[in-house]
Figure 1 (tube, rainbow, N blue to C red):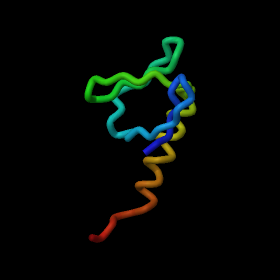
Figure 2: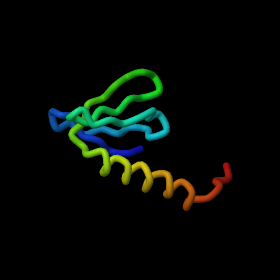
Figure 3: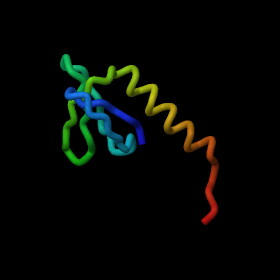
Figure 4: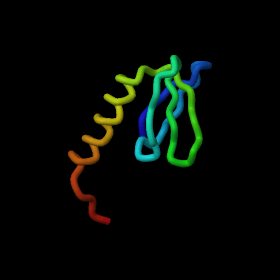
Length: 66
């Protein structure tokens, strides 16, 4: 999960696997595969970096045994 900040300052987590696309219009809008849209304060480049970091952490963790 990555942390994002709503326009009102509220922080929450988003599953980056559910993000369809992110656009700057001039606010940053995250569109999820469900069709839901979330406006956030975060910059597109910052969000992209968080997503890359999150996905790398999954690869670095390697396979998990249950």
